[in-house]
Image (cartoon, rainbow, N blue to C red; front, side):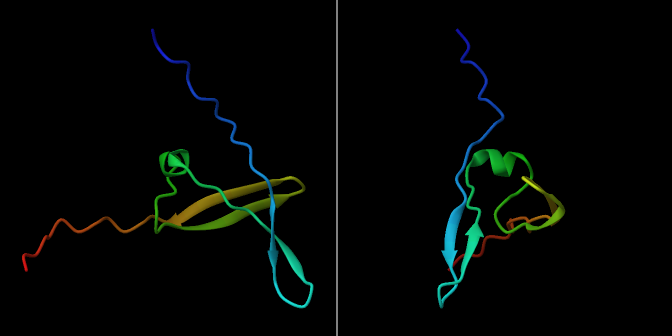
Length: 74
């Protein structure tokens, strides 16, 4: 029997990032294999290309460097 597909919705909570002197800023912290599957590999550079109330669109503008296949011996 096949397992049902995982839902494409991932729920998270906006956190607080203290910035000193009582100043606070919202902090988004997301993680998981689904992020890599969407093209956000570790080391990739990304930007918010669209912002509107309740919605951010993030886009990778520089993919992560591929690990080198050159393995040196010690």
